[in-house]
Length: 317
Image 1 (cartoon, rainbow, N blue to C red):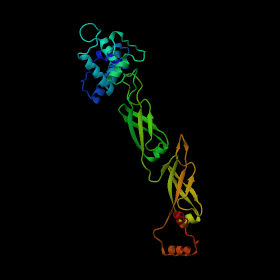
Image 2 (cartoon, one colour; image 1 turned 60 degrees about the vertical axis):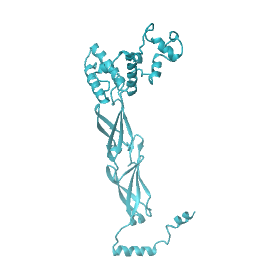
Image 3 (cartoon, one colour; image 1 turned 90 degrees about the vertical axis):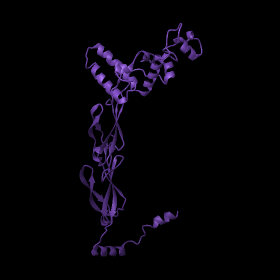
Image 4 (cartoon, one colour; image 1 turned 30 degrees about the vertical axis):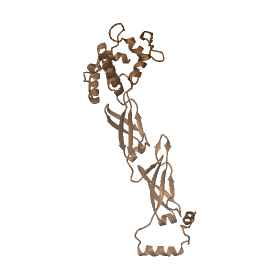
């Protein structure tokens, strides 16, 4: 709707609200009227349909802070001494107002709807922007949901309670912490018959006590004893949501080495990752006399190598 038409329409009166109405009360009033006059509730009723379009136009303008300010300015100007008339005697005429703006006689000023600057463009320059053309989309709704680690990896359908009602959202497998999911067409309905807005869902993922995400892979700390690492062993490794798997630790495996279990990571549209088990050698905090004697005997025969020699050499530069 063109700005000049706003002079003849009292949107506040049309919606039955005061000029200082707040956003919440404005939305509540509009929804009540929209339900009453919606074409679906009044099939074949042309009067109700026209009324629905009028209240939709009114809400579209008043719910937008910039358009509302522009509308109030135009209405205030129309209610005061500066009125747009067809010219002639009396107050300053329509052509005289615009003639003064462009520095020439009002009678020589032309307004073209399709030219470089039409009537609406002039009003836009006066009041901070031309009004939008065509139906506006509904507003987006921001929402959040918190998932446990396993659910985020495997995916799930959750139900959100939005202002528009209950909405089921499919969480894809492999969603990560902080990821945003757009649910199209489930946001606020358009007040002017345009498409509904979207729901922008931000996912928060709880930490797992054992596993960590590393892209498509899962990581786990794998404790092994000194003898298992030195002599080699087959140990059990936990998997997410499944039974443990057996993993072979080669003799002489150092602490920090990463062992890979193929295909037991995160499965998503990007593919399937692996389970990465990082070896951590556990040093016993208490030794029996027999174990202590055995280690002392081992110390006497172990290779006389300084494991820190390379570290010290590299530190010197």
